[in-house]
Image (tube, rainbow, N blue to C red; front, side, top):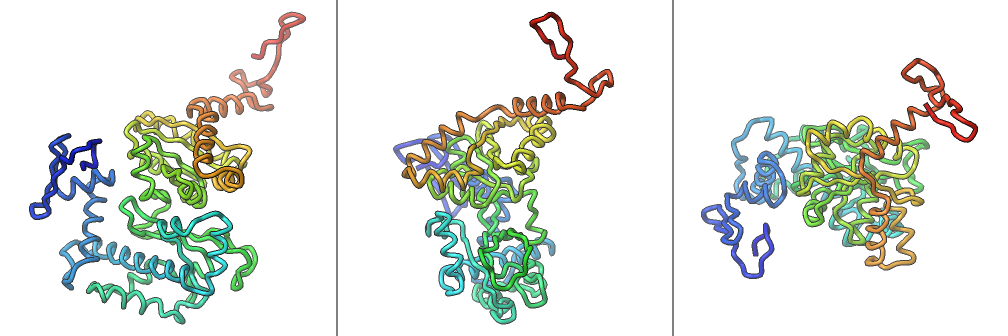
Length: 394
């Protein structure tokens, strides 16, 4: 069946020998690059990168395709990150030490299926030297007849100390590009770690590299893309576990920013998978989340919406702090079907156009005590009595 339109009788023809496809129903046609771009809603560069990575991972030839040195280094990084993701996932599923991580996921309501789908992992407390991580990477990649340099292993930034994994004793969350390739990691500190001192950050990410830039990535986009397309709407939340818990209960057109600050690129990138370019901002309901939403509506969205033709709305899940809190609380009383229905109703009931949120922010600033008015007066809410029963604010 054709993946680009609804049909009951197959009309889609794929020719692997010629590397082309054609649909006799809707007329879609092209080569492997066109098919990848349409299926993954990505540009030519992203499609090329994904197809090239497939050829590198499955080749029986030791010869790496002739590309520029910069591209070779990037692919080296991607292969190392992919091997590292598999190592962390294996540690989570098999390591005795990872028992606390598995229990944490259970307590947060994350199923084994979602754990596998998102490639969640665990970084052991042992040092890089003890686990022979570099040798592990080399052995795995050499089995695929791919040559990887030591500098590429160092460049992924897994060592924050001379012999220590920067993610040690943390739950590890692979960050993937839209094509599903691991480009970096997020990590969460588990309760009662043994090797850390006090005041360590709860979340730690990979360092910036040629493939990892927080401002240009969305957590869960590789999983959410087809569902954004299906629902014609992307929901952007704030945290990793907001995405994981919503996906786990069947709400899957959801992605997360890698931090509280959303960028122009992230919003536009999420919207590209929706035919109507629709996005709902569903950030946390705490003071930081509200401040971030206000700032987006007052500063970023006015130009972005006009330039990119987006349909942006804002919603919330109050009195719940965030989506993860909503899911964990409602699941105690509802099955997943009921939860999905209640989530949709809540989002719809609280949804407003971004302009309305912007106007509320601007009016709040305007009528804040002490704010100057156009005449330079310090009290904008100066009132003039018109008659005994009427007050007009000027």
